[in-house]
Image 1 (tube, helix red, strand yellow):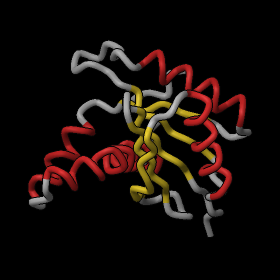
Image 2 (cartoon, rainbow, N blue to C red):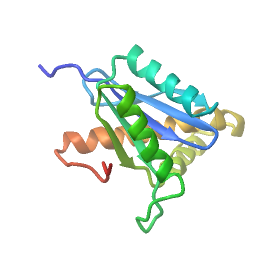
Image 3 (cartoon, one colour):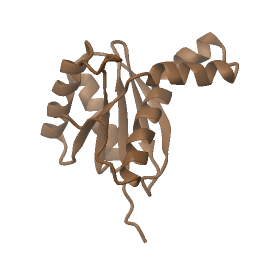
Image 4 (tube, rainbow, N blue to C red):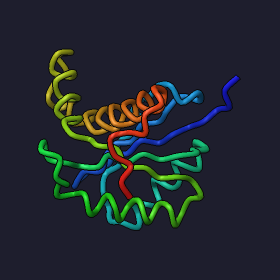
Length: 150
């Protein structure tokens, strides 16, 4: 039997952070919550508290890239977050190419006829779930991933 492993997925935005959590087998991702940005130290403290509460063994953060593969505007912030989380938690922190995840989440919510107000409330954690699910699927297929660039 596979040992339980919990992985936290993060989608960092300018105003919000989408958070997702894997099941105990590390097979599926579910949206967990949306954190409203209040400053680096407070945001990091909230993520660390969630990681400790859910006994997370790994973290994956969406790395923004342009369609042509160049790093996006938030890439430096993601790298800083990776370093800060590694300094605060004794768990591996990975990055994952997050291209189009927010658009994909928006499309799913539109197809489900979710109101604009409700979409704003869930899109970030849904995008985090898509990032985490892609990471989990890649790992299950034995691939190293599309990113994980420190």
